[in-house]
Each structure stands twice: as C-alpha cells, then as structure tokens.
Length: 140
Image 1: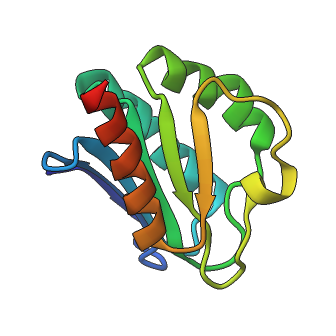
Image 2: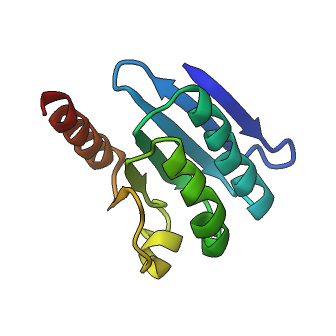
Image 3: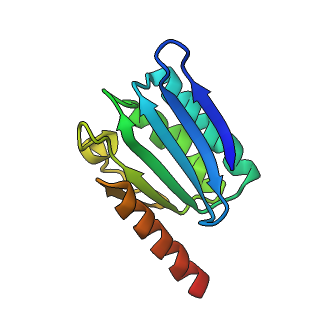
C-alpha cells in the first residue's frame, strides 16, 4: 500500500514510501538524484507514516539512486534516529546505491544505534534478512 510519493518535477527523482502488508514492513524506495531537501522530506515522511503504521521493520532501498545521497549524518543521528526509535523501529535493512556501492552509513557510521542496521548490496539479500528477523520475532 503506497503511503507517500514525493517526486521532484525538475528531474523526476523520487522517494516512495509504502507499507507491505504481506511482509509487515515499511519500504522506502529512492530513485534518481535526490538532493538534501528531498532526502529530509522523504525521511520525515517515514516518521509521519510510522506514527500511523507502527512497524519495527524498514527496508530502505537506495539501489536506484544516482550521485550523492544524504550527507547529513548529524541530522539523521540527532533528529531522525531518536524519533524512529520512539515510533518502534527495531530493524533496518539498508540497500546501498548500485552506482557507488557505499553511502553515508558505510563510510561514516560509528555511533551505536538503538535499532539493528544491516547494510546490503542487493535488494534480494536485504529482503531475505529482514524477513528472517521478522520470522524469528514471530516465532519467539
């Protein structure tokens, strides 16, 4: 179920946030060249919708991004992360950009997070891991 779609009319870059009812997780799909303002808008949309669809799992797919993405680690750590934790986020599968094979988390992430973050090169590996974590929690 699509919750939010932000598209830049200038270059058609976008962030689509959806809730996967079958998998029981939120999914953010980023495409194109997303500037800082768009990145913050997409991250804030996640927080707004996570408040309505409390979900412990997030699949963040950056595989279709082009160019730099979200260089504000400080904003993420001090604004977004605490809010996401309060809203119940516990596990994040993060797929890096296909054209760079890294991003802000793989280059600069040294601070402990209040949720589990796993970095992946492929969407398939990320979904497999997130499903396995979810299934473990359902069984426990």
